[in-house]
Image (cartoon, rainbow, N blue to C red; front, side, top):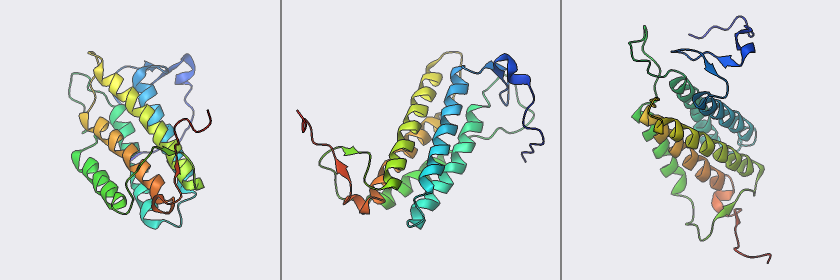
Length: 192
């Protein structure tokens, strides 16, 4: 159980932050950037949810995703340190990825196939979901870069989850746009 009694500690005043395991890291460290961007995406999903009340099924999916993203941030903030931890670290697991895939399939079955790329827009909910999708893609890129470093380890399920979650945000953005009927489609070279 998390218990936060004091919000400021002054420990970060030197530009470092504490991970759940291992030594302190600079606040610009790639691992910190990755889980910080996951937090940013989560906040953006919260903003999108202010416009999804009319879509209870999608709102419930987004709520689950927000909780999963906190799990994912905890996973990234708890790197393997070469020795056993005194507790079982929270990790993203395959069942979480599979659930997102089921959510994608449930929403996608009602969408017409695309004949062009979709421009972010249509309804406010759709625009905010596209914004959340792009932030989540950035988190994915940072996490993949972190995983590629020889001195870092990343749970492979985190990368899968981020990839699927951004796909879910894409189909959710289309679903809240009247199942794609209100999508704004890209017209290549339209304004030349």
